[in-house]
Amino acid sequence: MTTSTNWRVTRWVLLGLFAAYFALPLLSMLDFSTRTPGSDPGRTGEAWDNLVSDSVLVEAIITSLLLALFTVLMMIVLLVPTMIWVRLRVPGASRLIEFLCLLPLTIPALVIVVGISNVYAWVTYLLGDSALTLTFAYVVLVLPYSYRAIDAALQSIDVNTLSEAARSLGASWFTVITRVVLPNIVPGVMSAAFISVALVLGEYVFASLLNLGDTLPVVIALLGKSEGATSVAASLASILFVALLLVGLSFFGRNNRARNENA
Amino acid sequence: MTATRSAETTGLAVELTDLTREYGATRALDGLTLHLEPGELVALLGPSGCGKTTALRILAGLDHPTSGSVSVGGKDLTRVPANKRDMGMVFQAYSLFPHLTVLDNVAFGLKLRGEDRDTRTRKAAEKLELVGLGEHGTKYAAQLSGGQQQRVALARALAIEPSVLLLDEPLSALDAKVRTQLRDEIRRVQLEVGTTTLFVTHDQEEALAVADRVGVMNKGRLEQLAPPAELYATPGSTFVAEFVGLNNKVAVTVRDRQADVLGSRVPVIDGSVDDGPGVAMVRPESLLLEAGGSGPNATVASVNFLGPISRVYVDVDGAESVMAAVPSPIAVRLSPGDRVRVGVEQTPLLVVASPSA
Image 1 (tube, rainbow over the protein chains, first blue to last red):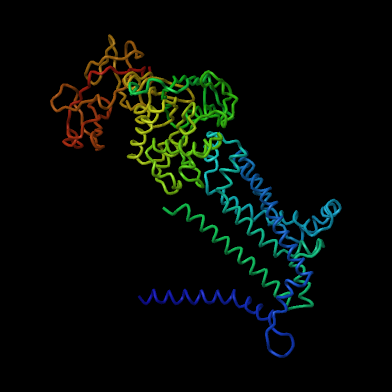
Image 2: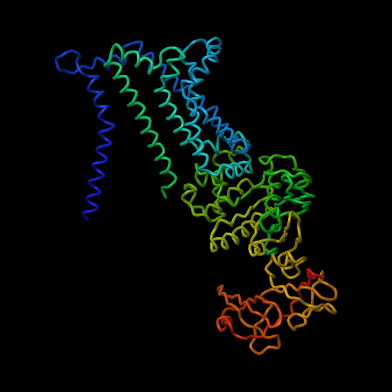
């Protein structure tokens, strides 16, 4: 009995410590971003107001959300059919694809930026210098994480047998991919998408060094020098947004399992 | 079994002609020619790597022959892709689509054929009823047992009213009791719908139990193709004899189409050695262990209880060890070390040339 009681206490203490470790900085940010400037103590929502009224900040938020959206779309369009096709038809190439997808992980972001700045001279020449052209660089950036998530989902089903069954029932390759394989890897694709969103919303190095206009992290860094409270409010908002996404992700995954197991 | 087939069969004749399939240096199929009558169930039997699955996959269009041709109902299908062949297939691995209900799984092929919702629901429900799972339409694959999943897979394959039904070791992943049940079920359903069927298995009992004809395959070739009883009674080669469970090899001498087997004179079947020394393939149930018989003396080495029958291994004095299949009520009275006499039933048997001769 005492052992189990001890364990329970230990567990709660550990949980409390971790909660404090994660929550304290966030609470401090909340405190800082709502404090009245000057010496008299008091609360103000001015910094949070700025998130929707400061036009530079609002534009940056919209840019970053659009970047996240385009990155996710392009990642899905490029990666999902490629991975399914490689698995079904050219399994010999799977090592090569894996290597290529994981490569960005091994090269420091700074090095990539220096490397692709020349490429971007062409991109801006052809497509204009909108911040949204960062999408191309971000797709490369999120490849390793997306690859892992989708690969895990593909491994959890017997892709070959399922597609052969579908083929024998009369399905074309396009139907096999869209109606048989894709619906069964939705959780993996969703988690790839959520991770990509989280990465794009926090990316600073590419955006700042390629100098392609203001994304949210760039503006937050800039504001940090002049309007501390607003910058912290924006940071906190973006952290909470990503955290919500991740909670949504695990909830989504659980829902899916429930369908498969509820007997 | 043939007698119970419905008169007007919907099946088509299947023609595999001189199929060869090479994977690099390995030859998985070596000139296989096989003809299936309309409505017939042919089982391809053989050890793993004998090419039986390759043959089935080529018929399905999931693999392609290096040379040779495939035709169904007189139409050449050699170059037709799998999704245009109209063949229903059940796989060894569970293959139900996890994201669809059982009913939607069965209706999948009908949906691809553009049947409207009512028609495909009705047809799918009929097929589920046929395999005894009418109640389970709204479940998902993960909620079914292995045997139920394979039944649904069978219903799904039949729903498209296929020209040929292909069964690729559909029972291998199941436990023994379910396997026997489902085996008989498959045969019942096949006779009812009358679809020409190719059944691939490595289990001789399974093949003999369900098939109109059994083809024994070895090294990419067809060793023998015959109705089960004929295959069992008159195996064409050592390989076939061993594969259908005639595993006792006894050195004999053949004279006047009779062999001296452990002291008994037994007639030999066609294709046996004409005269002189050879090896007789003796089936375990042809050996009788008697207390007061006239056969040679032997010592019981071990007894394996298998339910209705038992396997008794005996060392024959001055000869080799043999295995006898003995009714268990008799076998229980035997224990290792007991002395018995070995008799041989007068069933014609195959005598092949001895390896050294």
